Length: 476
Image (cartoon, rainbow, N blue to C red):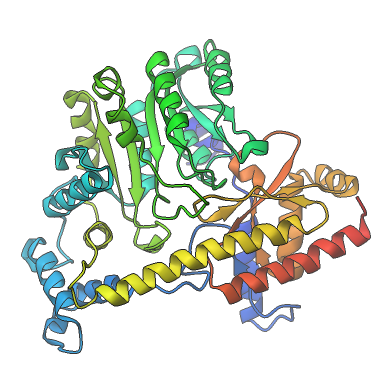
């Protein structure tokens, strides 16, 4: 290609991400080369990557995967017996008994898909899940991209649209751009803890018609990055709305293991759907997404996830399998997924340690979320809705007019400029709210609170120092 005119116009239309990650990498490189900075390291808490933020991986998971990678460890008697037995069982599901072979099937190893279906059935109190409705891929973003490719069609008024929450996961807008789908925004209500509002859904779908063809609604539950946890009443209203408007429900439930708000519990859309009677349970199309990047497992770098497809025409679902079949999914994350959905049980030699580690992660997350929220609300010019689940806080910034003016002069969003200055002066990388498509007149930042307490304490101390210094220079 010799010019931009030869580049796919869809690619040219992909929105440009903020430069914060590149800046963080640049500063880290400068530190390693001996450049003097007022901090010794960059701390990145912009995304849900708990291991990078100092959280320890689950011993059972890592031990089993280690044995699968190096089967000679099957003879290592210092490892618990259930670790070695599980590793052998997983190796038996692999072609040639090796994780280095191609996956047995394009949609995932059958025994792993069966374990996922059994997990979903247990989770939902007996609502049946079938392994043939489960499709594995390299992370929830990849599974979502697969489905978007299936959904995308048309141009102009006929272009496929997806109702998308504002704010939404920061990776979602780019996925919509890549697949040629129109983003149809619906605003969450910040003053109600980022709740879904039914009137806003009706406004969004009505406004979109004539501009595109809305065909699906995206839901994040628990909310990413808001931490909102939907109750049964809200879920039922959204399901009825989707049924009335003939929309497919796309439900991201990655943080289902991390609900900690008082009197809050995770409730899957599928469970509620199947308890609403046949009028809905047999007609509403639902695709739910989960991954091993979940809070407790936190194996983000392994890139593994699945979708469960409900009430979809088998002839259509077949094309999802065909699309996935063009490349064999990686084996190791499939094995990690099996360990996530089928953990040690009481009586297993690894059970006590496993439960101690899981409870430690959950306690750390809950305490961090509460303490960080109180801290942020104590800073002048900042307000934060308490999170009920998930791994993020999403506080609002009340920025001085000179900062907003400077950002306009530089051609960047004011929350991006705030994060750039914080990164350059204090070595803390946060996410800018505009990445989550928060497009009203308010500014926000995104902060992952699933971090080692000592790491989070350092992040908050650096943030306070920068924030107060900024307000000293430019009072509100």
